[in-house]
Image 1: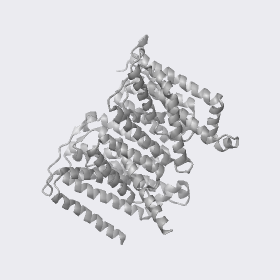
Image 2 (image 1 turned 135 degrees about the vertical axis):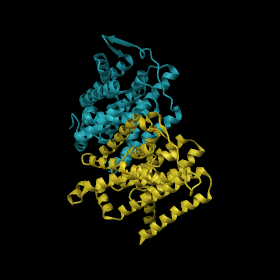
Image 3 (image 1 turned 180 degrees about the vertical axis):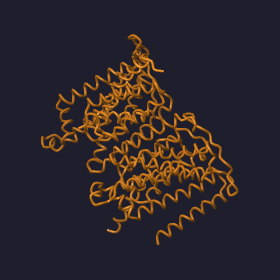
Image 4 (image 1 turned 90 degrees about the horizontal axis):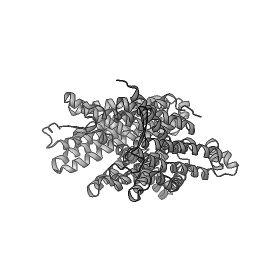
Amino acid sequence: MQARWLLALAGVLIVGAFVVTRTVDNRYVYFAAYGILQYVLLATAWNILGGYTGYVNFGTGAFFALGAYTSVFLIQAVQAPLVVLIVAGGLVSGLLGFGIGYLTLRLRGVFFSIATLALAVVLETMMVNWEYVGGAKGISIIRPSAGPLFTNYVQLLFVVMAALAMGAVAVAWFIEHSRIGRGFATIRDNEEAAECMGVPTLRLKLLATTVSGCLMGIAGAPFPYYITFVEPVSAFNLSYAVNSLAMPMVGGTTSWVGPIIGAVLLGTLQQLATVTISSELNLLIVGVVLVAFVVLAPEGILGLLRRGTRRTRA
Amino acid sequence: MFSLDLFLNALVAGVLLGGFYAAVSLGISIAFGLLDVVNIGHPIFVILGSYAAFVLNDAYGLDPLLSGVLFAPVFFLIGVVVYQVYYLSFERKGESPLRGLVFFFGLLFIIEVALLLKFGVDYRLIEAPYIGRSIHIGEVGIAFRLLVPCVVGLLMTLAITQFLSRTFYGRAIKGVAQDSLALRLMGIDPVRIKTIAFGLGIATASVAGALLIMISPVEPSIGRAYIGRVFAIAVLGGLGSIGGTLTAALILGIAESLTATFSGPSWSLAVSFGILLLVLAVRPAGLFGR
């Protein structure tokens, strides 16, 4: 019953996003909103692996950029339409996620995290050396026309990203409320014990890394059209890794709501700080908030709320 | 086209680079290898050391090595504070090490952005009389800006191994790595020993940072490139083995130098991470692992 209500709500929000494009004309609003929605998607994707199974991924930038570069390649080669880009980006990054999943066979805990960081740098080096997709100096992408429904392309991207973010949240919700989610939780709590009880840990971990990677690739796929200039340093930026990890940590990692709360809060804060102060300072804010939450409130905002309600009941 | 001269030059440069890498990795070997504290932020402390050397050199023309040694006690204190925060918020509560990892990752990010705000993205370099000079043996040239860091790195590694095996505190640090309960039964506080050891690891970053800015110009974000290097070295060498760290540092230095010479410098970064991924996938215990 709850599922149907949430689906309806998601539908209303997407239609709402479309209606907003009819009424608001300020382009910056869409530009900023796209950024925040992209983080909802990335944070949710990160949380499926990091929050549910407890494998901390520092390589968000790698999956994101792989999606973006898949798009660049397809735009260069065949001028592929946006839908194809999104599907292709998801597939390629999902495949990478599948590969990373096999690493978890040998690498537990911190070693896995370091390996994901290494992966990001190796991929970045490859892109720097691949001239066809721009190499180190980057490549300009020309947006196609926005079509009859929208006045400009950023509006179209905004609605698309709203739909993608809702889709990712729906996936996270489904996982959390199914046997898969409980399987993930057993891996997080005690992998050996889960294996002994007959939980197919490898298959579950492969599922988690693949889904998580796929969603990150989907987030990156529209990126070339959004930014219109792709170069390795911005596509592989460490801020993707920090943000997609900080947002669930701030919101709360054990529920699908957590990443949304964190992404909306931190995303909005950063957009405001970028406009009013400076873009370096907003990164400092993310870092400080992340460390503060990890040290002082490891359960995130959801954990604080839960503690608060428990106290009032008692 | 293969040329012997080029190969020999690359080999020598690689060995020299390896000595320097050993200096950068010492802190990780102590924190990660002996204390099980995954200080992923170690490279940013090295960069911090570079900027400390830069500021003193820029203002007073101080020799980078001297300022590296001068700042070591300050870095030791920073390390003590960082470890206390880490211990109180994670280790004592028995929290999973992953949260600690996120803590250090956040710390790395904060220091990097702070440096960026203070100094900008310009590459900073340093002046000292011996930096531009070099000596030639046959066809092989040895640049002082590589030779000095290598020698200092080797001396520091030697000093640390001597400290760990000869002194009371050094042996206590090794004891913490083996069995901290037994240490407690001997009447030594393991937390105090670990605090000292972690501070020592951060103190080496001060000297390593001074060496780094001698070798190449420094910019806040280059610390990230060293995350892969130091972990590749620490893991390849086998955790907890300082001698293994030195061997692994030399292997990585040579591999990177050869790659840079024969396939172009933009590939050299991938070498360290490639080695890291390979070692993690094939033999996580490393060459000299416990």
